[in-house]
Length: 290
Image 1 (cartoon, rainbow, N blue to C red):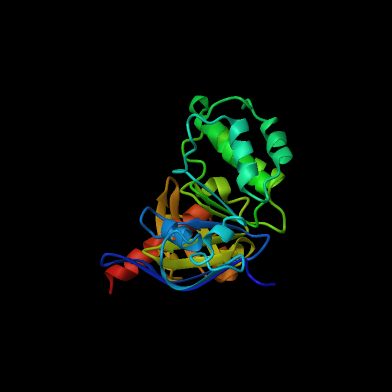
Image 2: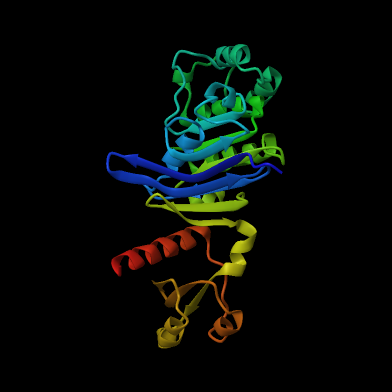
């Protein structure tokens, strides 16, 4: 099957700073991909390059199109929600739907109105009177009604409380996502999307440091908590990262022998956020030793 996204050897400079360095990125239909990185790591630049919003060196094809050469055509197949996205303050929900129906060939007004009916937003309510959560729901109504091939979410839940964040992702899965769609999410809140992702991509200093299917993570990464007396034996197994816990030390391994670890107790699969921290700490140590 042809990838929804095929990006090869992407490089981008701002002045003399390289913000993307040899990045390769693909996405297939039916994937939910989390792109994780610290501020300035290059994740937003990567998203902009995929949407044709910034020029980069390298080859990119999204939904069978060149994002720069066929941007308007691409936007008929792609939806984009960003924390920085704004809607006109004076417009009502009904007016926004009418405008989108007149300008977007794939917009389904009935779907948008049906989703809106499940929220507290009134059709004649203006954006300026809506809460942050309501505006996010309004964006989501547009996404669901367009049913685009690709949905790109750049920090979509910043400013929402825990309940609203969970509601957002539940609605995304129930009302939008299926095997014909692809979702790319960037977020600082890794924990809130970990259970819905099919793939994780970590980016640091403009480079991809991990690109892995979620189902494969337990076979590659492990963590184990031990007493300080076991420190020499664990360090001999070459962990990528260690940290202190209240009642011992925690070691993280990238590639491991189950038989060796079980000698010291029960090991488990780390969370995505712990793997992210461990890999970045490992990168920092390697850079400092160059």
